[in-house]
Amino acid sequence: MTPTQLRAFSAVVRLGSVKHAADELRVSEAAVSLNIAKLRRELGDQLFVRTSTGLAFTPGGLRLASRAAELLGLQDRTVFEVRQAAGTQRLLRIAASSLFAEQVAPGLIDLFTARAKDLDVELSVHSPSRFATALRNREVDVAIGPQPVEPDDALLCRPFLRYRMIAVVGPEHPLAGRAVDARQLRAQTWLLGPSAANDVSAVSQLLLRLHVPEEHQQIFQSHAAAVDQAKRSKGVAMAPAFAVTADLASKTLVQLSGLGTSVDGVWHTVVLADTGPSPAAELVRFISTPRAIQAMMRGSGVNIGRFRPSIHITLWS
Image (tube, rainbow, N blue to C red):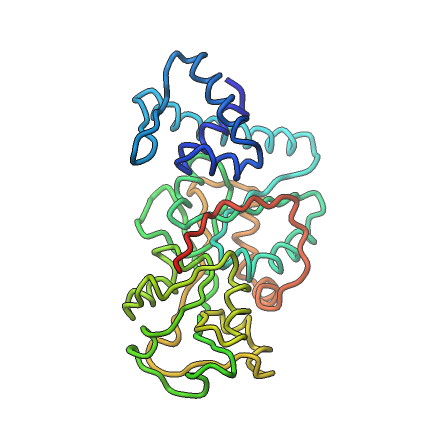
């Protein structure tokens, strides 16, 4: 078995299709299928079959899925440790929720890496529901986003920044400048970023409380794209208050007022409880400092060595 074959199989398991795995790995579907075929021949197991409801995995396929994640995580960790021992470039792998990755991570990473020129940062976007798995499998070194729903003694979770999401519309929107109620909000078109597809995000919880129908929700590939549509008075968008200060001042956006027009969230760092001295531990200490908070609020250019988007968005019309 080769790492390439295991990565292909692991992606198919996680995403549920060869096509999605190929898109994530940035290779052809034929390349993914070829790697899976080689694994099947070597192991003498079909691993999975296609059914009308998706992929059905054999017992051997499920066992390999678990082992593949562990082996790949161990490989990445070994590469990091060897580089560290050789005194060359260090690697920090960050998993972040979509909102944090888009709105906050650039300023933080720019400031953090400026303190250590030998540090290479890999940022990937994950659903917070995968944080625990990614950390246990050593796929990432630290996760940043909402607090995990289920407590886990193997993980160390620390809050570091409270933020507020506010509802905004364009100046020509019918609700601009008016106090609104839940009934009016339910009737609107909601222009949402990728975080709304996650059940544990502050925005998704707000939509549930307001009982906003799915057919009224449009989810965009980025939060910036959703806010841009709101500026054109196409609907209601949710945005971090600190990120739209200039737009509110210039009146290209108008903040709505009333029940259900804002919601608070808290970002956390999550690492394995046994994490020793490492770039991940350094980041956890650094992220709550005044300089780091200021950099996250203001943003800046970013020195991210690698970016691996790992989020898939469902669009409702």
